[in-house]
Length: 262
Image (cartoon, rainbow, N blue to C red; front, side, top):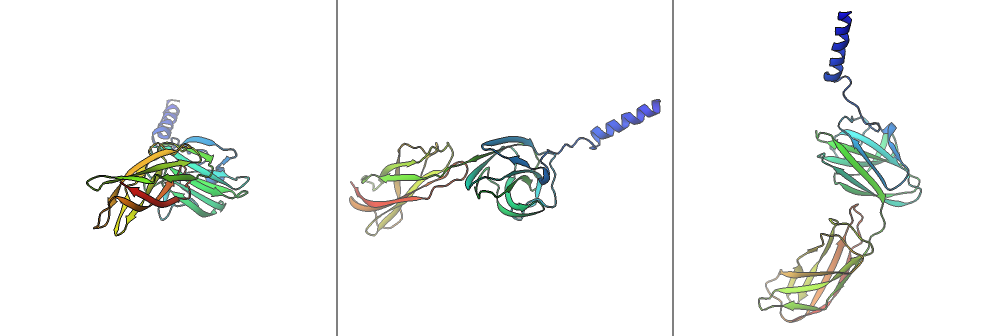
């Protein structure tokens, strides 16, 4: 009886410390058990520490994926779907494929924490979250939501300032059709010319995102030519670039016109 008890105790120790029963892969470790996302917005946290690779996994570029988990979504109509990853795991990728499990075609992939998919209604997209390059796993929160079109508007002030040292300051306003969060990219840049003098506007970055209300911008001009600027008329061309947290980017807007320096 004691021998049987000892054997059972040894088996328990082996299972716990020998690795037989310690690993518990996530439920969506395999593409066959991909989480079916039927409603947006969607958020889920999963620990991919014990997730495993498979021969039919998607590889982002030429890099081999490690711990993988799967999601799938079939939008009912054409839409743009944004993805956001929140994790401390290093070297994590999002790969999106279409087709059938076992023979997926890689549609797009990214190592950025934010990405977006222009999805076609009725098409099933398989989303793989994976570690890479030997990185350890850990908790990963994935969020998906439909993102709307982003557009911008830009204005320039027709009067610029030039001081005795030749330093020029130009200004204007910019806005978006919807609010974007802090950290999303909004940049104003451009060029200024006057005869044989030309320069570029030191780019203006808005760290708090883009607003539906006009936001004032002001910047100086970096001289690119031997000849400097003087008081009087000059030609200004400015452009605004904006993206949100899901890589939905507006078509750049450019405004050009004459400004008076004084």
